[in-house]
Image (cartoon, rainbow, N blue to C red; front, side, top):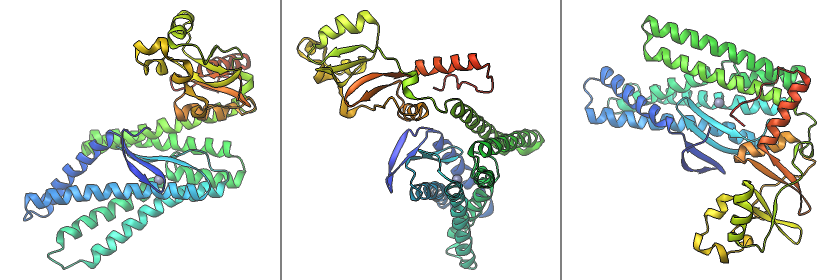
Length: 384
Ligand SMILES: [Zn+2]
């Protein structure tokens, strides 16, 4: 999930909002003001609205703290965390690698629900201390709501279906017991699918028996878990089928190169347009200097094309993501997915060995699957 609005950084982790988060913020403010108005009919409209907005904001903070706890624990275990995105159904911390052992996986997963439970209990304790204070009534109402919602959040996330926290905890325990990450992920993902189907069924039954939107919401969460569980299943299949495959097995060796001294005008007229290729390596005395695609060309004013050299317009080597021929293909795929790249130059000591492209990887996989008759490995069509 990509965030659309960047809020800032905390402990080096980018914090962002997905557009769908605004929908949930509105829903919370709306339903809370209804609830407060019903429970406390003598509060003014202004107070109810201000209180609802503050509660929604603090709820957002508690979700953030939950994800932040996962992120900080991941960092403490040597994994890097790219960003935290808050969206309609909660939050996601994008941790870049998988945990290297069951203990780390367990700690990273369990700290989230523990944080939510801690926040919940603290809110309830403070609310309890405020009993009887008439002036602090609104604060008490706010703390009660936050307390229960955070306890609910902790309990809900402990449901043992991967990729929910509970599913990750289950996976960590199975991993520790069996020693096989593959098998534990498969079992945890299966449990996730079962949990998801139960959610969808309960949600639909709830909706038709008068549960209203709450029922649909549960069904929607179920659908979301089902997708995520399915994706992790596919990922395991993909990882297994790519085990032992190196970048050099899949890369294209002939790749179009152009000299850095060539003018942009000549490049467009003699290379870019007639060959129909969109990706060229710029070389200087045989060594890779950078890369040029229509994207870089567009950034230079057309009138300047005849007098602009490629080494001025190109994306220089220092800013290029490159990979070595010996790297595992799965690692290259991770880099390409993370940075949304369609191709990676394969470089050794400054010399170009080949190009790894998305299309080539897909056709390689298809051929392998055809040869093996292995239909267990699904191609994530349209995703890579
Ligand atoms: Zn969590």
